Amino acid sequence: MTSLRPHVTATPSGRGMILLDTRSGKYWQLNDTGALVLRNLLRGATPAETAVHWHKSIPLPPRVPPATSTPSCGNSPPHN
Image (tube, rainbow, N blue to C red; front, top):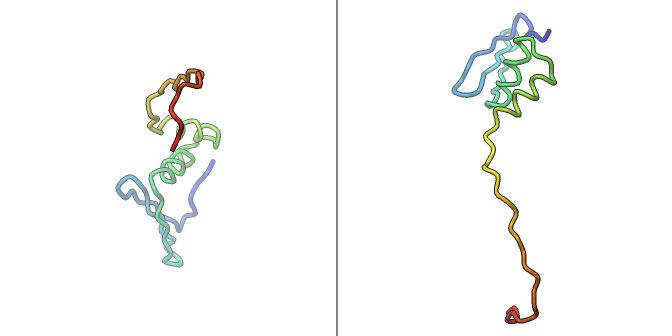
């Protein structure tokens, strides 16, 4: 199972997360995707399960059918 080192803390920040190494004072700011991945791994999810969860959390645009084309008859005006 994935875990943070004992001297690393994780704090939610908006939709993301801040990781702080209390030994060195260095910190890392995770965006919402990084935070989602880390939270899932820390909860015991496998990388594959985490990928599926991440994929399902992405808002996808509505499907638009492809535009249909009609064959040209040669009667269209010339392009300028």
